[in-house]
Image 1: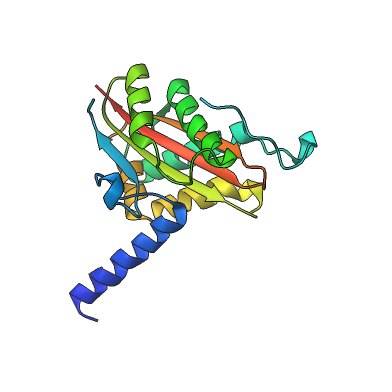
Image 2: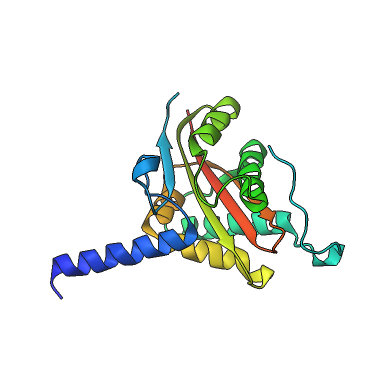
Length: 192
C-alpha cells in the first residue's frame, strides 16, 4: 500500500468512527459535515427525559457518568502533557440540555443547533473558541459508557482534536432516553 492509499484508508477509518459517534469535522460548515467534531471560533434548557423504567434503582447515575467522562478526558490530557480542564456548571447545563434534547427526540443525534449552543455559552462565558463532542450508547453496561465514549473520542481525529485543544473549561451533560440509551455531550471552551 502506498502512502496515499494509507492516508485514504486512515482517513476513511477515522470518518467511519466519527460517524458512529455522530460528530462533524472541526471547523467545517454544518451543510458540509458528515463526521468529526463540532468546533467554532469566536463569533457572534430542556426538561429531563422519562426513564425507561419507573424503578429508581434502574435509573443510571448521570452525574457520576458526567464526572467519569471528565476524569477520563483529564487523564488523557495529562498523558499528553496537557493541563486538566476545569468543569464549569454553566457549560455543563448547556451540554446537559443538548443531551436531553437528543434523548427526548426534540433534536436529532449530532450537532444540530450547535451554533445556538455556542451563542448561549458566549452569554455565560465569553470565549475565543468553543467545540463539542457527542456520543450515544445503546444496550451497553452503564458502568462502561464513560470509558467507551472517551476511548471512541480519543480514537477519532476530530474528537481527539477537541480533547487535546487549547481549552481550559468544559461541561459534560448526560441524559437517558426512554429506550434506555445514554446520550453524552461535552462542550470545550477557551475563554477570552
